[in-house]
Length: 165
Image (cartoon, rainbow, N blue to C red; front, side):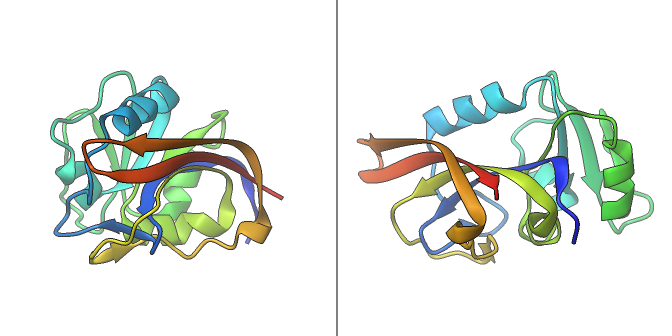
């Protein structure tokens, strides 16, 4: 599969690659939500319909929303609804950077073509029903890393910006 230079993935995962359970996040990290907002504001977000529906409020301000859905009649205010990965790629072809924000099936389909990975890695395993594809860190070059500790949740986590080699 061809790497697309303008496709980036942004995701928060547990060390066992868990990303969600019952269409909800596994943990609440306010600083990670702020980081997500800083990185994605002014950009295009590509997501599956369940990810959109899991957002507390949508559309998120100052971002273009492209929702991939297999339901022909889906219509979400402030969002462009499409039916395929190829359609999503066409819609962002001229953009400098577009962000894949979930869910699991959408991550799996875009992962092989993503050029950049904005990863929040929680150094703990979680029980989940949705997982991110296993990351082969040999395929990625670390651009930056910040190691942090969350007092409220009592766990360590890291922000990693990875670029595909």
